[in-house]
Amino acid sequence: MKTEIFKLDPDDPDLEIIKKAAAVLLKGGLVAIPTETVYGLAANIFDESAVAKIYTAKGRPGNNPLIVHVHSIEQAKSLVSNWNKNAQKLAESFWPGPLTMVLDKTNLVPDCVTAGAPSVAIRIPRLFVTRRLIEISGLPLAAPSANISGSISPTTANHVAKDLGDRIEMILDAGPATGGIESTVLDVRSSPPVLLRPGLISIKMIEKIIGPVKQNSEPHLHGKAFPSPGMLARHYAPKTPVICLENPAIEMIENLKKDGLKAKLLDFRKTEGALNLPDDPEGYASGLYAALHQLDEAGLDRIVIAMPPDMPEWLAIRDRLKRAATAAN
Ligand code: TXA
Ligand code: MG
Image 1 (cartoon, rainbow, N blue to C red):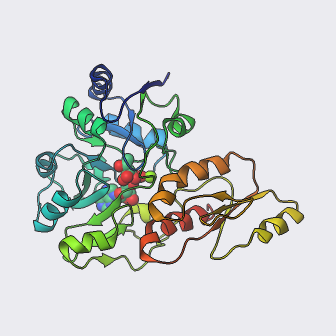
Image 2: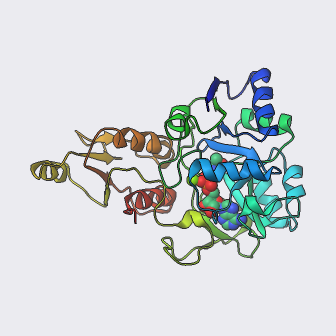
Image 3: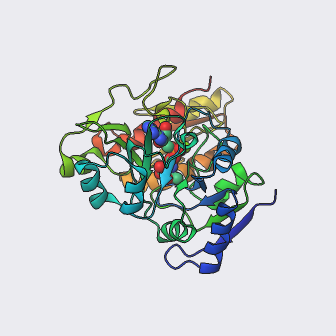
């Protein structure tokens, strides 16, 4: 299949292109869509064979449910049976934006979207272009990150094309995703709500609105029953082996070189010879996946990552880095 790529202004998208993408979705095709976090691979939630195509294109395990993207709180409510006070407050505070809420689903949401779960994960994405597409198509869109399952999430249309080119009908290119890491996933069915995946909306931001949030005590659930499959240890990983260290020195790279191994350091500090990312969490998140894609293509034997400090504001980033370093099995 030939994948068509269209460039779009995220704030002032060409309506004709949006209509083309909507037509593909209405016919049961797959469209890679920009969002403020990472690019998503979208299908019409009401079309079971289209949803099945997402799993096939990504090689995604069938037990990992998809996030549903909607354009308004009203549309979210039509898919949720237990919209509660916390959901309302969080939606008003963070939507459109990178907070995904898990709530009980209505019968409108097909089981294939939720991998058989009685709950649905739902959010309103921040980019205008994405909301416009959802609105014009009239369809809630199931969209996981637009990468092969287990590999690095895409923050550019090029990343998507590299992984999924020729497997999908269309890519909408609205430039690099500025958020850079995936949305926060919060189970809002219980009180207190439970954080299933840390992300750009921090626990502190959520607690300011609704009070205490329960953190999942085991961030690296492996091989057990898991509350959210994104909690699987290996996720977001480059093909090149990754070593995460709390305080790596550039000498470590030199030592690896002496052993005949090509290695590069990814650092939040301005270390000479390293690939440097900003030392603030937002800046770091924004550049992280592009940096990992770049290092993964550099023909290295090892990627060494200097872990940012073990502090709440770095939680989501440390989570992604640990997963990147977990060896495939
Ligand atoms: O920022 C994002 O969230 C991006 C953009 C495209 O929106 N999407 C994304 O989707 O990261 P994905 O499929 O890569 O991650 C979805 C996460 C997974 O950890 C999945 O297990 C969890 O959400 N999830 C989905 N439905 C769920 C449910 N009903 N209950 C618990 N977890 C759920
Ligand atoms: Mg993903």
